[in-house]
Image (cartoon, rainbow, N blue to C red; front, side):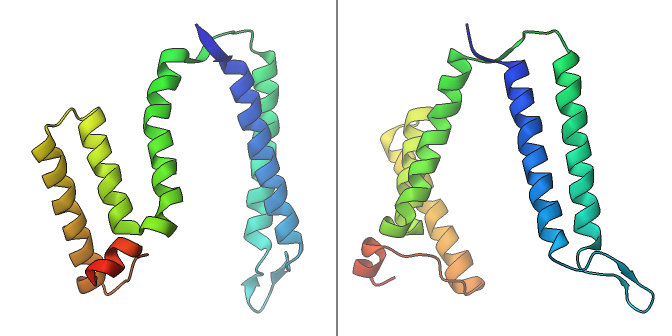
Length: 159
């Protein structure tokens, strides 16, 4: 059973590409869009042309989709369920990072993914994410010297 048909999604995608192309064109028109004999292309020259091409492609996609007669399924209920099973925890990870920090949030995310989707046993579903988070810490904080967002757990541990 299909929740959304393919034609609807193709029309929505064509419209989104058109809106994006229009925004690129509008932004480039705020810059100089010409060609200077001394310096070559000005700052808005290339974005304007790319935005126009995106708008043209959008119209062609939209018209091509309107001409097609197929009513194929875009996503079934089961496929959407599988997609959301990964998407929702990822959104929760991103939303929790300002409060938990990158390391604690990533650890919880990886433990959840290994336990629920990887069907790993408890020792393994804790050990592997812990190793990954320690490696991330060593690479970012010590090697690259880039501090990632830390939450109260990292502060408590003095990291």
